[in-house]
Length: 429
Image (cartoon, rainbow, N blue to C red; front, top):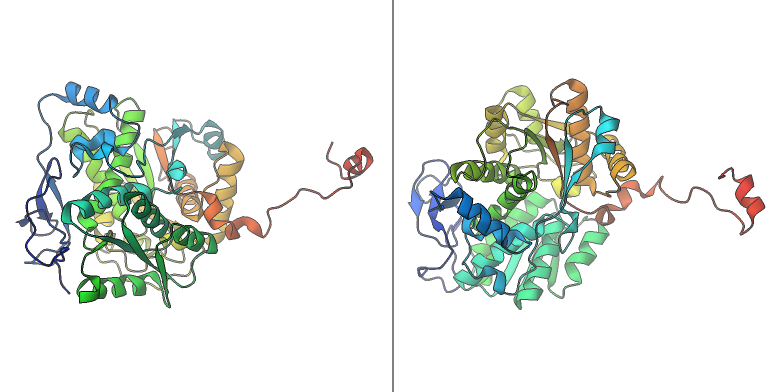
C-alpha cells in the first residue's frame, strides 16, 4: 500500500498549516514533513501532528481564543490550519452546547455535575463535521480536487456537505446496509455515493486500495491519506468542554468508540491544554463505550489484553460498527493510564438509553449516543464511575438519523375521535 499520495504524485511543497510542525510516528517517533501520508515509512506506525504550540502567555492565549469565532476555528492556534481559516468557505462546525443534565443525573443517582456534550447541533448533525472541516483545510493545502471517505454514515454526509460548500467534487463509500436516513443525507449534496457489499472494514480496505491506484489521483480521503489532519478535529471537543467548564478539566469523560480516534484525540487535546497552561493539571479518567455486537476493544480491556482482535459487527449502532478499530490499542492504553475502563451494552440497553436521554433532557440521540449513555449507566451501577465527580457524556449525533432503532414501540399514545368524550374515554385527562 502506498503511504504517500499527493494531488500530482510529486513531492509536497511547503504548506501553511499554522502551528503544525511535522508528522510524528506514534510508535517510533520518527518525524516527516507535513504531507498527505498516514503511516510511518520505517515501522508503518500511525502518524499524527507534532506542533510548535504557543507558550509563555496562557492568559493572552485564552483571551485570543475567547475573542474568536463561535466555531472550532477559535482554536486555530492549536490546530493544523492557517491563521485565516475562518475566512474560507467551510461549514464552521463546533461550539456546541455542554448541557447540564440535572434530571438525567437524578435518574442515574449522580450527585456531582453531569453534562452531555451535545454535538447533534453541528451542520450535518454529528461530530463528524469537526474532523471533516479539519481535513478539508489539509485537502486545500495539498491541492486535492476530490474529497472522499469510507464511512459508517455520518462521515459520508459531512464530507458531501463540506465538499459542496468548498466547491470540490465528492465521492464517498459506504456499506450497502446503512440506515436509509444516512444514505439520503450523504446523497442530497450532489456528490457520488457508492455502496459496497460488505461491512465497513471491507469499505475501508477498498479505499486503501483506491489510494494506491491511478484512479485515486487527486483524491483526499479524509480518514485515510488525510487521517493525521482529520483526526485533530476531535481535539476541539476537549477544548470546548474545558472552556465551557470555565477552563477546567472534567473528572470523567465517557466517549463512544468506532475507530477509537475520537477518544485518543480528546486525550491528546486535554494534554495539550495542560501543556499550554490553558487549564490546571489534575487527574482525569477516560471511559470508552461500545455496543456488545461490535466490542473488540471492550473485550480486550475485560480480558486484560493489549491486542484488539477483530470481530464481525452485529449491532443497531452502525456508526460504531468497526470490527477492526485502528486506534483500539491506544484506547486501551489511555483507559488504563487514566484509571478509566472500556465497556459495552446490548442493543436493548442502547434503545433504553436513547429514550432515557430524550425523556429527561429533551435530547434525541442516535444509537451511538445510546451506547455512550448506556455504558455510563452501566458503569455507575457497577461503581466504576464515581457519581460525585464532574462527568461528561458525549452525544455525537442526532436521533433523526437512526429512527428505526426506536420506531417499533414509539408512536401516538392514543388515537381518538375529535371530541372531548373520546379524549376522556382514552384516559388521557
